[in-house]
Image (cartoon, rainbow, N blue to C red; front, top):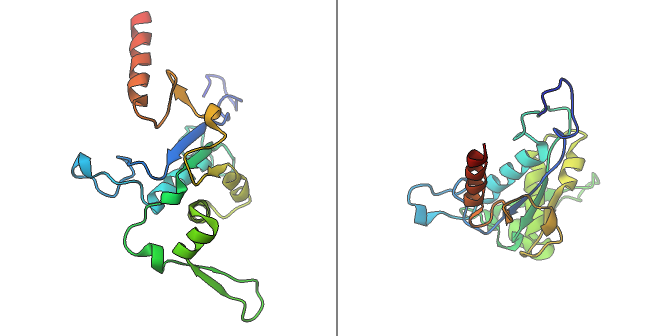
Length: 183
């Protein structure tokens, strides 16, 4: 945030984050002990991280009544990772308020019918606050079944390397070292 008092445009600017649903992730893995046993993020951990980014809770200017969240691009949703037998036992219900119209579908059927992106969207929707900002925040979630997406130019980069890709932390460290020598 700037040094001036009040709200600034720069503080509320939105950035783009890319997350892969199938790549092993150290912080979102369910197995922590050996570094070689790191798993892809499970559906719940992935959805909670995405909900945090969509709400803007990772920013110092976060306020529950303002919409200061970022855009999130999720790739490889066809390979969502779930623990246990949730894929076959988790049931999604819908009802149109008419008697006898309760419909139930399991997660594996929903993934075959609509894809993993819809399953992820339902999980993130359940983790967002139930208020008038929910649909606006959910609209900033861009989920894709494969690795290709049209938002490649919008993703945050350090030294030409997208955040989250292999070697992006080394690029950040190189930029910081260059700034130290310059000063």
